[in-house]
Image: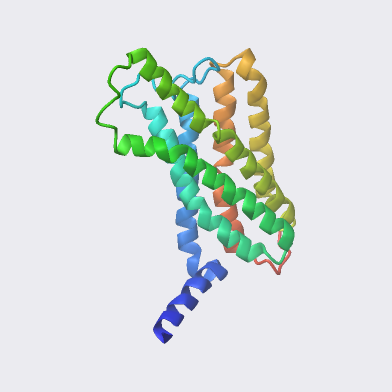
Length: 243
């Protein structure tokens, strides 16, 4: 029992004092999450995503084949979500005393957004790793294609709410830690501006400008895991240091 108690204390201290014990793990998780989001952004910048079909992301047939853009994008969001969950948990522990109510509220929004991203994208990753070996008999290729695209749209419909919840959580944290670091506020605001700029171009120029603005929004958003890790490693909740 004493041995297990010591192990438990070490694991708790790993999260309570990341600048002493968990800095390398936090850096690894932050880099993994950021690189995964960069891969997702590149998918938007490389593959056109017009409003009339989401070319490059939706299946183009009822077969088991998936576009590489779908695989990379979905796998990137899965890795991002898995790597960011512990970072957000450590942030809640380290910054809790700054403003308990707002920090817990932001943590709930962020963790919920990460759960939505996992629900969204795990089916596409699993379909790539374990593709179905048979298709229903008697259905035409057009019907299979329609059902496959409809299934994909049902999952991608949660993508926007997932990111919106993340923006809300990040905005709250950025406001709480603004006196210590302004990078979180800059990243959140700039990324959200590009996301809003994407909306009118979904109708005006869906083939070029819309995916560019969306890709830029995700690319800037990719800086938040590293900014949060920097906050956890280099700052102390009991100090008032700025960047």
